[in-house]
Structures are given as structure tokens and as C-alpha cells.
Length: 319
Image (cartoon, rainbow, N blue to C red; front, side, top):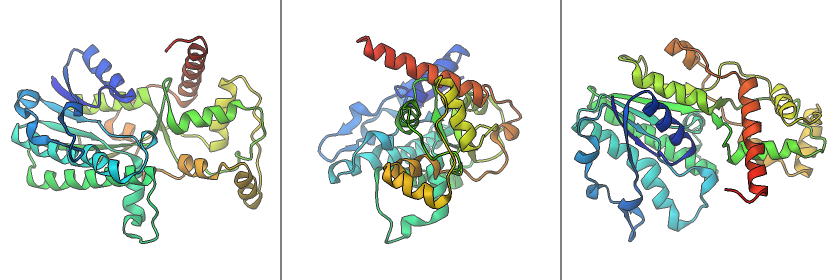
């Protein structure tokens, strides 16, 4: 197949590009960097030679986005963020119809589900943060794609909502969690509820490949999270074991938890890590009738090894 991939320079994009090319597919990439209009900070979509990118293409995978851990809120960059995270998804959806693309796979986020279900985007008390702005861009992207899908039913539009993605090159919230557990200090985390699901990067990439290769895919929106989810305490114990540290995580009552986490200034971080989850319908592995490639136990071990190797290389002066 001939595939167009956006966001190929990111951690997930690199893995998708490598796997699909190793399968023998022709995978071309599209970067929006050279199409920025420097005057208004938006992408100049009319200057893109869509025919060059989309002629003869079977599948488009749209992954390009500003991740919320990588940007700061300001009046200057909000327009730029929406241009890439939201407008691009709609522009590509329409072009897919014009060039008779078979499938358009959009990589969204579990945050979009949370925002749509909570209705907080219409709440006047809602406070904008980088993570909520990111969720809003993904939510609006989904709405654009769903609108286009109604008008152009010949294209199979598919939305994948991954939970928190982790792996050997993990950054952001998961890396903070690793750093936190590597410090020999008791933490009252064992009894906290695991409201956020995780997905190992190799498992997510396998899901994308499965959807690419299936002639028919039943469904439009898929929540992507690993099937063998653990309690938060069990998950932390796996990480501690992989770090070769005695687990110093302990249980505490809800009131004591709140007080200790406030003192340790961990509440904002844990809210980001634990408060997001998909709808918990049928597992995507069950829907696709496929197996999870890497178990959570193995995935945590590989992630910790990769993170420690990265720290070692940095300490040695290597990139």
C-alpha cells in the first residue's frame, strides 16, 4: 500500500514509519513546518501541493500535533496550536475525499473523550491550561472529522484515542513518574485509584498497522489502551522492581493522602496522570480480534531500561 504519514518525526511517528516500511509499504511523509505563514502563525494550507502528497495514496495517518507537554500558553501561540492540532485534521479529511483516499486514520487522545463527556468546555469556571487546551484541540478535531465523514461516506474515517503512551523513549508525565519512583522517599500512592489507562508504544503501533491492513474495520472511534491493566499500586510496584528499588509506596486514607500529596506538591502531577480514561467499552484487541503484542510487565521493564540507558548516555555526554 501507499501511505502518507504526518508527524513522522515524533516518538510515535518514528515507530509507525519504521514498522510500516519494514512491512513493505510505501510510506511518504508530510511536514507542515515549511507551510507556516509567519504573519499570522497559521498553516497556509492553500500553498500545499496536495496532489503531490495524495495522488495514488491508499491511507493517510494524521499524527502531527503540538503535545501539551511541549508548549506554553500565550496569545501568540494559541492560534498556531489550533492551526496544527485542529485545522490540519479537517483540511486533510476534506482532501482525502477529493483524492479518493480509502482510509483516513486520525490519532486523537483519550483527553478528547474526557472533555466531550464532562462538558467542561462550556463551563465558565473552566480554567484553560496546556493540557486542557490540548484536549480541546483534539476534541474539535474529532468534531471536524465526524462532520466530514457524514458528507463523504466513501472514505473510511477512523479515530484512535490512545491513553497515556509510554515506552523506552518516553517523556512527559511518564518520565516524571519514573523520576519520582527512583527517589528513595516514601510516597502515599498505593491506595490511589487508577483512573488513567496506559498503552505501550509498540502495542499502539501494532494497532495502527492492524487498522491499516484490514479491508474492513467496523467502527469509527476506538479507545486504545492495553488490556492487562493493573491497579495503580501494582503498576508502581512493577516500575520499582524494574528500577531495582525497594518499593517505598504505601497506602493511606483518603484524607491523609490529600494532606501528604499537598505537602509534597504532587497533587497537580497526579491529577494529570490519573484523571484521564477512555470509555471502557470493548477492548480494541477484542474488536480487531488481535493480541496485545507486549504485556504490561514486559513493557514496564523495557521502558525503565530505555530510560536508564538514556540517562547513562546523557551523563556520558552522548545525545
